[in-house]
Image 1 (tube, rainbow, N blue to C red):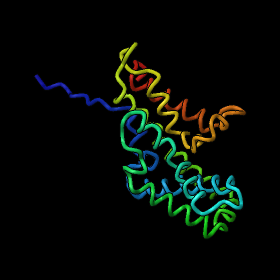
Image 2 (image 1 turned 135 degrees about the vertical axis):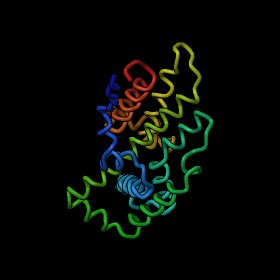
Image 3 (image 1 turned 180 degrees about the horizontal axis):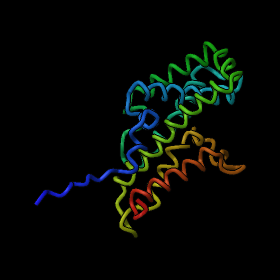
Length: 208
């Protein structure tokens, strides 16, 4: 009797990860990661310099930019007893200082970028890719650090940490209080909360 054919199982969803777009978005290559980090810090810098008083000092703008770029990366590690991102990863301070120098010494660069919707859109894409990575990373890290209580997995803690990771910079320095949500939650807060919730529930329930 002849041997029957062996039917190999094919993953119908493999195409979602096996392409160049996925490799870019998932930041598998360091070069892509650093480029996205530069776009992330550069866009944050535009917001910081636009909001800072004209008479603000060099140090005020620099510290404000550091807090804006790494606010969630400072708060969440403190919550889960870990090392804040700007202390653990030297790439972030380098990206922040590079973007700060461009905004401080060559402000015309941002003015030129705003004239081109396509270029500005590309920088926003780089910004959102890094923010999504931050939300994902902190949601997973918080789930590993927080022990379950009422359910089989920690439910609200990781979602809160993931949300703060994606928008924590808006609340720093602490003297801002709740002013950032005085007129409602901004889109960075809403999208961070939605992303953290979906990722957390997908990884810990039968939705996966």
